[in-house]
Image (cartoon, rainbow, N blue to C red):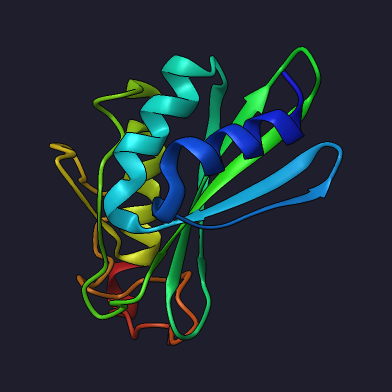
Amino acid sequence: MKIDDILSDIRNKFGSKVIKAEKKNEKRAYVDIYPKDIVLLTKYMFKELGLRFAIATAVDDFDAIEVLYHFAEDASGFVVSLRAIIKEKEDPHIDTITGVTRSAWWIEREMHELFGIHFDGNTDLRPLLLPDDWPTGVYPLRKNFIVPKRDSRKA
């Protein structure tokens, strides 16, 4: 399957659930969706199209937090990313995709810890990377991040 076929197929199958679908080049495409539709589209990408879930990433875009789920088609080498834009930055929520692919578990933990994104349905969002004494509610990959003062006696 070619990247153009996948984009056309997604547009036809999901209609108004797709905000925008664009091909950047022959190896890269983005599909903007509503956060509420992430599980539905992930199932389609993973189970029906047979694309491999590669990784997920997040970006603080000042007005929103974008969560990008990257799916690879290994035979042809292209990547299609589902981009869910979470407008509620103060308390960002999106459903977990771990029910579709367990491989998302660790990266959702990372994004929860570094961006403060709540992955509803993920039963293990305990800290993974930051020190044990890291302050609750301080997310180092947010644009508004300020280095927290830490007790130097603990160092």
